[in-house]
Image (cartoon, rainbow, N blue to C red; front, side, top):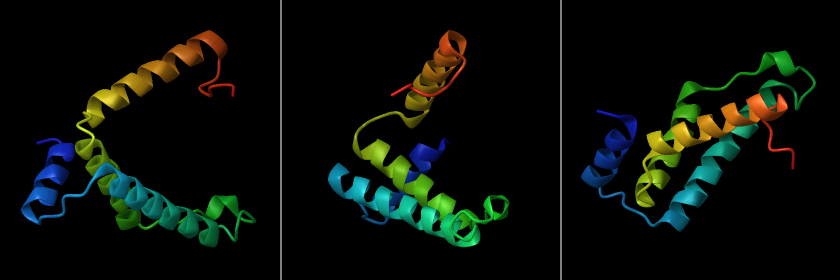
Length: 101
């Protein structure tokens, strides 16, 4: 079973359904918690090699992202494949994965 389906089944089993607007806010909150951990563990950038992130915090962000994808009826795996293809094309065309914006 893929991770998006596992999240969807968990959400359904525990009656945690929410609309996409709530899911985006939840994702933003979870990514903010990751940023806080990274900022604190690196002394707010003074020691960039000291990054320390709790795996459950990263898992919370992944859960929120997969729940958002499911609430939008987006196949997260297909979206990732499309994104990887886009980055591959950029690297081939420009030598950089960035959008240049």
